[in-house]
Length: 242
Image (tube, rainbow, N blue to C red; front, side, top):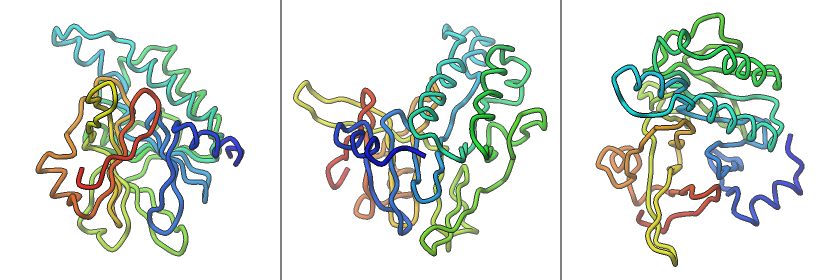
């Protein structure tokens, strides 16, 4: 668990932002992860391991080192927060062939990461519905926990059958923009209403869906939501109405 003084320092320097959701405090890290101090859990979404190698099969001129970069980001987050648990909210692997294409070095690095925490959970997504048993960690359809007397579900996409629970999801890769002194800057976003939180994608080459897109506005109406944008490792709350 992260030292409280260290956490306060991160927030003061905008390397992290704190807010309340489902009756408890959450920390959005500028690297793109979510941390829950109440149960010492780090959540990430949309890692998309091996997306680079997938795209390069179809003559897309992208580097094949995306998995290594994402693993390095994950390692830095675990170093920072020292969590007891890590929960990956789906699309951790870009496709079924990712398990065959990942290099031995990256596979070993992933195994080492899973061994640094007491509990590692893979929530399945639309890109990785069949995570093999050879991957260390627990594979689930949904991650469920009770915090502050509220039932909370972590899943890849919003589940209408679970509307009576607060939900944390990935899948949409939200992004936004903010006017700064240097001009308008853009970055990945976290979007939250009183009952739904949509996480930014942590992986490389993950693009994004604007928070102003009709899909995002339907999912999280502008008048009912807050948005935080990530830019160069820092967290910025977007103005009301974003």
